[in-house]
Image 1 (cartoon, protein in one colour):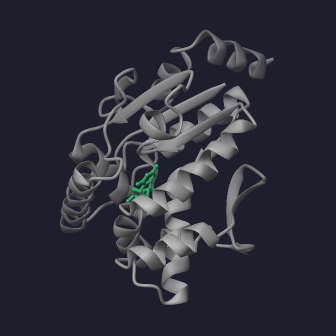
Image 2 (tube, helix red, strand yellow):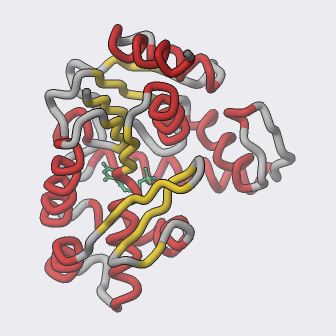
Length: 236
Ligand code: DC
């Protein structure tokens, strides 16, 4: 089966997808990590993120793999472990123009579909339900208010994790900066010409602003009898 989860940054879709993968024995595909890996490789090779021909060549050439390790997953690009490097502010800045390039998207979507051929995948991103897997068995569009998302991100940066009930002290100025950055990225992701962020017509929308992490995970699993059965089998 294929499960597609899309939504804006900070909606909690990565943590939710990872947890549903664990409970329902699905392989987790982080499509954002793939765009980040391309952006990182461009920076390493001195390719300008705004150079469409250059970034497309990097995307077509780069071999991106996921390796499970313990409870987590490592991202390998060209054989190099880039798990930490793809989360830096430099990559964060470069990934928007890189992921707006249709030729880069074409290369990534082809890879993602190959990944899906193995079956039993939960993929997470911006266009998974609309473009990558339009026939996915379950489609979710996970959102949350910009304020709720900014708060989660800001707490995360201070070592907390609101999804798990771990709060952390956050400077109001820092939180406002995170909010501004989120709103800017949302606008960019939703207004770009190539695969803008939007819910698939047949996606179930879940707003996580007022829900706990566990409630969101349960709501996703409850959407499909097959997911529920898989989670039940996992509990035994
Ligand atoms: O989900 P994330 O923050 O790791 O995504 C990183 C960037 O990649 C973000 O700017 C949006 C883009 N992205 C995309 O365009 N399409 C996807 N399927 C996933 C991510």
